[in-house]
Amino acid sequence: MSYVIDRANLNDVDVLLKLYLIVYGSNYPLKFGTDREVMKKTIQSSDFLWLVARDPLNGNAVASVLFDIDLIGKIGKIAGLVVSPEHRKQKLASRLISSGTAELLRENGPLNSIYATTRTNSVSPQMIFLNDDFVPLGIFPNAHKLKHYETLTLF
Image (cartoon, rainbow, N blue to C red; front, side, top):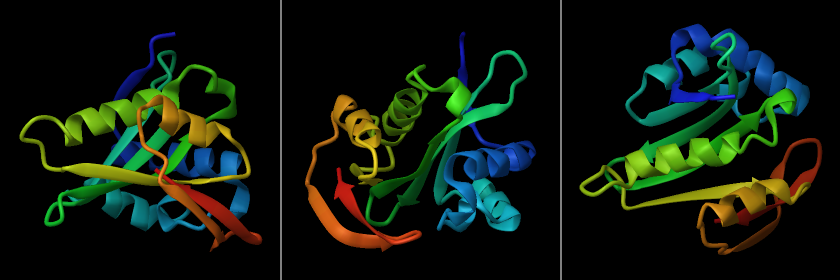
């Protein structure tokens, strides 16, 4: 399948809400994955780059990643990476990250660096960032609370 990577738009909000719910359940801690109004503002904001991978059969978003952009500091943070269970093993997470970093770190681009934290309940997110040439910088034991405190990695 040939998935299309592009910017999220307001028509994607309902599909994205369902996607975050399916993958993370009702415990997702970030409002841009659970609050319709926050999602709309985030999609429209120049402080964020929200990319989605679209199913070529119906155009629905089946994977998503958000780049939180600090233009003054020229740094970005990757957040909210999610891929529909039915569309995994297609390298969509890597394609989303690569597309966003290429746009934001291009020559004379708006950012100098991008970082991410990943959960450690699965090695897959860490492998995605390693395969996309992110540098592992350390771990934060018990740094983030979902149902319980979790350890995060920094890339």
